Length: 358
Image (cartoon, rainbow, N blue to C red; front, side, top):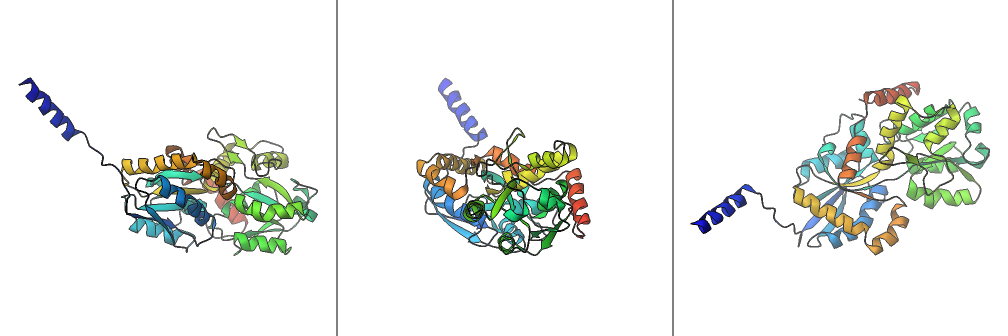
């Protein structure tokens, strides 16, 4: 009788407790949706991660990268929302542009970014620079501040370039005027031709394109956005350790520390443009065991000696963030406070743009 009751209790417990099937992607193909054209930063991030993820996911599945550019990343992002299965066979390549579309209330957005499951995040950083003849040496804005006209590139006011308008306004560069319709690469070429006065790049292009010009003496560093830690402390970019961060430059130009609404806006901007620059997400409703299989694979990947050896050159010197911490950053980046929206709309109005953050 006692044996009977023990067996009965075991059976009841088994029924009450969900048993997760072992995750196995053997003979499966995983689609990694990148909402940009091939060859861009998010594409390069996916290409680099791809073989290592195959190596460490259970069953070593084939991973195919699908590029769906258009609409400022909205076309591919909406495609993922509508077509991705939650069985682990779809990955989303997220970036600053994808997040900004949500944070600024773009009405064309149909994707539920805040519900996606985070796997891996790659922070990046923005570098600003100018021609040597427009500055009294590195990290100097005095000549640009004196100019009645200081031109810089702006893809559109609704794009991720929006934060440049805010940055230059907060630094008191009254002559700063954006030139819409220029992409990052197009803007840099215009800068080299002398058509605009200040330009910027992310980590990879800064190393590849800008540093050689600095070494030739043609270009000087101005500042970086800065690396924002989990504790809110802003540190200098290791790729340009002598360059001040935006908060440092703000204090230099304004005679006071970044604080209040300006500091809040900076943290929101920093989360979207720096901390959550590139990330890998799974669809909403992905089962926990599949999410864990991915995060476990990501942990093994970032500790792989070959990965470590190649990652700094391919991705920059910034440590990758895995799992829940990555998710918290993405969600924070996708929600601008009312005061931050007011600040962004104020500078949009000041620059005669009709577009407004919602």
